[in-house]
Amino acid sequence: MDEREELLEELRPQAFAIAYRMVGTVTEAEDLVQESLLRLHTALERGERIDSPRAYVATVVTRLGIDELRSARHRRETYVGDWLPEPLLTGGTEDPEAHAEMADSLSMAFLLLLESLTPEQRAAFLLREVFDYPYDRVAEIIGTSEANARQLAARARGHVASGRGRFEASRERGEELADRFMAAVERGELADLEAMLAEDVVLRGDGGGKVPALARALHGARRVAKTLAAWGRVARRVDVNWERVEVNGQAGVLTRDPEGGVISVLALDVADGRIQGISSVVNPDKLRHVGPLGDPRRLLRAQAGDGR
Image 1: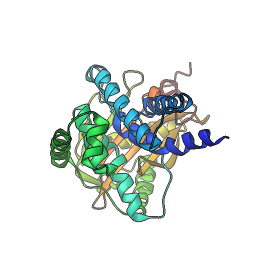
Image 2 (image 1 turned 180 degrees about the vertical axis):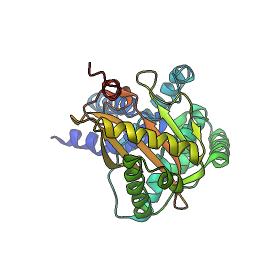
Image 3 (image 1 turned 45 degrees about the vertical axis):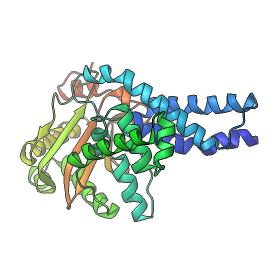
């Protein structure tokens, strides 16, 4: 690997961090990163003077993200059922402060809040609040005045603050609760499930019209617990395997069919020792990056006694 290739690989993680938070999908974020690095490579090949390759890539990937959000708005408005971000399986960290910061800016709940912002507000908020860019750089990246960049960030901050929940800072507590949650779902233990859910817990499912999923979000501990227990009974009948993973910086669960194919990813929002929200992604288009896909329809047919 030559010096230029090393530079591009060094810039890739930060570019992806911005891109994923901008668009909420892994596949689109990877496309934006690839395009931004290609543009940098081409500019360097032409002999252009670039004082800060990192700033160059951050600018390109942010502007591409704004364009992508504008074009995606109609697709998301006409999406079948709830739209959820593509889950990102993340590794652990031994630094509690770093974990809390990562969980806060990557969680499903946080990314869903960002969907209420305009593309420019989203960019200004992320660059300022998550990546700590000064306002003059935020303005330069977005292509606006510093005064407008401040206004965009302030409006976004207000939207996010009004809908933002609390997140569990202790990874150990979140993981312990997720272990108990997974065991209770597997066994279909209704009382145990209800006890670990917040009274106003929300369960969201994203099948995208591709596979069976919740038609709309479910609210309330009793209702959500009953649904989860029913899922657990079906899973036992068709030998679904449950695997504890970290999803978007928080505790989560990955389910696989008996052959190892990915069926779903569940992300848990935890605060005050209880589960506040559950995001269940079963849309196969949003799981391809996780691993080889299973066939949930085949499992449902097998559960119903039809093996075809």
